[in-house]
Length: 203
Length: 203
DNA sequence: TGTACATCAGTGAACGCGCGTTCACTGATGTAC
DNA sequence: TGTACATCAGTGAACGCGCGTTCACTGATGTAC
Image 1 (tube, rainbow over the protein chains, first blue to last red):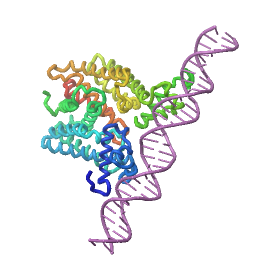
Image 2: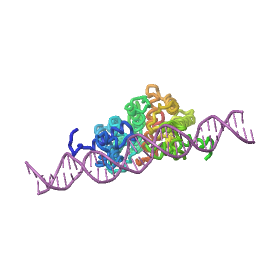
Image 3: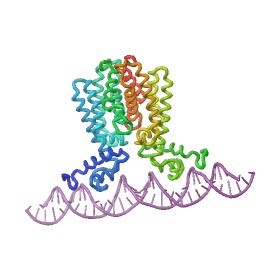
Image 4: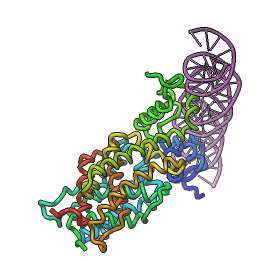
């Protein structure tokens, strides 16, 4: 344990990490401030030096998650350029990849019941993530004839919904045996959807 | 309050109803056995005359939910006959309608963390619901040329995922302002998807 | 119909527990002179 | 460099609370004769 602060050395981040691990293991319900403190090797009271309380700790974990999430999707989007289609598909894949790689963050972000509006920083991070997907959807929409073009925000909502659904239903070990790997499910689902938009070839 | 049992008159169902209401209001986290008992006008200990404990009560609420869910989807499926497309679309709409009309049940079923395998009756009810959607997907698949036909269970999983995603992200008052009514979102999303399968006209 | 008895749904008190939070404190770290 | 002091991260004890669960009980309902 490297000491870099006064006593513990970055207890703040250690608490967030402990919280994320507990959330991942036991769900947002199972997470307790006391246990997070214990995991970090510290008294529950020490948490209050860094956070306003239990909710604040979860919110900060969620905020960090949204920052990473937005970064990852932005990176995928950029990497797919200049093809609007490649950028869009990469962004969708980044969604699932993030959920799989950082389940604690994902749960804190979407299942912990924390309000995105409780904190401006949290809201900003969440909006940034949403904006990336909307940008990708908007770029893509340019390739659809105007009269057949759904609003970009609707396309983005469809993809977000399908991604989230796949994560919740099939990318979690919830006893519901997944009939297909989640990645395949999302890939094919988005593929069929894009074909429906007339954006990829029918065959 | 009509008395039809010994003292309370169907306390068992009253407890389930109370649990559903509490789950709807406060989430699966906020639900407590004690409060459900209080709502039903009874001592916490009385719950143990009818259920093995807290988990068992939630599981029973979820089971009843899956029964209704399966019934509703089956009804929608039947009503859409003999058109495979109409049956499929009606089934998808029934999904969202159920989630909107019975949020307590929906949460107990999909967000309470209750394992579908803890009880054979619960598992059976859940499987019945799943089977209806798979049947609808299978009927529909017959209209797709064999070489371009994805497995019916995959189509069913796509629709389930999108429906669940719409419910979780846009049909709940989670502060995330829905850009479109959830019904429209699901309707258009499924429509685009079906077009991608070549099952409805491109225009 | 009336009485004695059996059943069993719900009571009320008690339990041990872990929770989130508060508070005055302590003692290691950092800083001014 | 050395000393006195200020800062403040973390302690440890305490709190009130509501939780799920148990237990011996009570008393209303149902039943046998």
